[in-house]
Amino acid sequence: MARSERVKEEQSSLSSSVVRYQERNNEVEIDLAELFVRLLEKWYLILVAALIGTILAGVYTFRFVTPMYQSTCKLYVVNSKDSAINISDLQLGNYLAKDYTEVFTNWHVHERVLQKLGLDYTYQQMNNMVKVTNPSDTRILYITVTNPDPVEAKELADAYASVACEFIAVKMDTQQPNIFEEARVPVNPSSPNKTRNIIIGFLLGAILAVGIIVIQFITDDYVRTPEDIEKLLGLPTLGAVTEQETLKQANDHQKKSRHKANKSKGGSRS
Image (cartoon, rainbow, N blue to C red; front, side, top):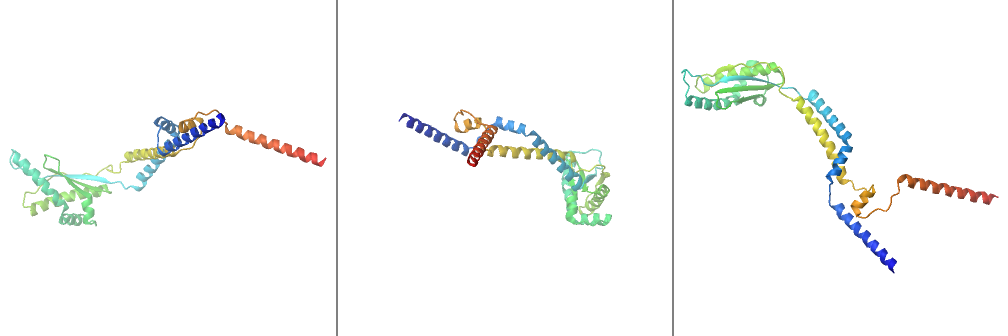
């Protein structure tokens, strides 16, 4: 009677442990220390993935991205004949600078620039290439042109400045702005940023590898060690049989069976 009760207690304890295991299995618990150890163990995979990301980013940047060059011409939008400049002059210059930025979106200006240089771009392409900015508290317009050809970028910036000056004087019935600074032929491309792209490739490769390792760690529910059994079921392990010992025992059992079979065959023949 006592033995049957003990068996029932063990069965109930085992069933409760299984229930706890199922509840724990349903809830995702992450041991940060163990996760950190797993990442350290897989450091070589993270490094390889980062290097692959670096190579891919470098190949894409150097082989498939067209270098773009920027050239800037500057206009002085107000000429003051008086030596003294008051606040109203500065305010007027700022207002005019904002008005003049609209000139560079006019199709007449685009068409004159195209005719002057003999180019064949659409108005939308011209809008995308040219950018006009007015630094705060100044009366200077920056006409910046972005183009894959550095010489053409310089010629476009100067052509826009020249055409805009004439257009402003005629259409707005105001004093023609002066070219404050002519554009220069850019030596180095403004984009792509090769160093930044390579660093981004390195980081993306490493992050991707870390993400895969973390997902594998979270979804890994295999029991491999006695510690895993104690953690999941809450039951202490009395002993462990290694795989090598199990295989050795199986081989010994097979040898004994073969030996007995051979003996029985020999006895029957005699």
